[in-house]
Length: 257
Image (tube, rainbow, N blue to C red; front, side, top):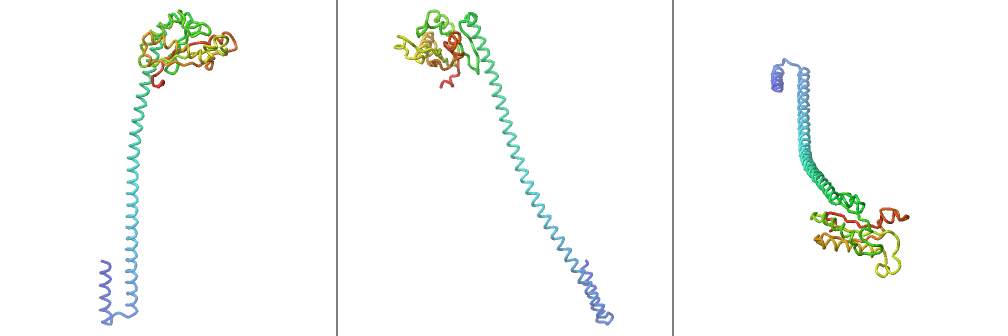
């Protein structure tokens, strides 16, 4: 409308100028004002066009931010789902561990009850550690000094131990022979050159006895540790007596493999 108005004015002025009603100065002044108004309108249009471009750029930037936030949201959702699954798996593992601990505790109580008489007599000791059950038997109950032949008194106790542990089909049975640090001497050196041979022979004797009671040999492991896993100092008779022992331990089959 403004441009049309200015054009109309220009036409009128032209007519007036032709009729001699408008001086040249007045006409030039009016023409200058018209040109200024046109320039102002063109400037306003350029400013509006720049504002439109700026808004378009802002919109594109916001859309890009929105897309980035959407991707971040999806990533966080996936991470949340993953953590939820991990928590559920850990809860399941904890429940299984608690059930396993209760089972081990029940087995410990049952084993202790079966061997209660021998424990009271001090003939053996039952221990529970890290999911393993161990029966410690004093050496003198099973063997004479420097020998690896099972004594009759040892057979009686070992038979009862075998009856108490043979039912744990999911467990392996590890037998470890231990000695004190006193070296083998005299004629015994011809049979057992060192405590290594003596401890291993005693463990093997116990394994063969347990096999004879009906325990599958695949579940049995014999090991000799000589004097190198003491439970007491070897500087006294009492300490050396504690170190001369046979360990019978129920362990997971996977640990053996």
